[in-house]
Length: 105
Image (tube, rainbow, N blue to C red; front, side, top):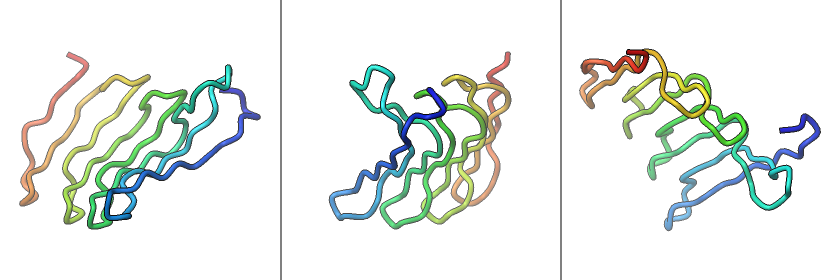
């Protein structure tokens, strides 16, 4: 994406009107579609954050975190150009950690 691209914030609601997704996006170079670029946040219907991370040119990139509806961590890991990399950690609703997954193996 060009640095002078205009950034736009999109909000997608649940049927109830609560925000389901909020993310930054830019218009593609050919101006035919929107491309996610920047912060992405998904929300549970109760308003707590469900997932957060960054997009770069339409692909997940960097640290991502998922949360249970009560706000406790559910998963944490990294993306590089849309692919999971490294060790991802997972937690149950009660806070106990599940075995992780190493995407570098």
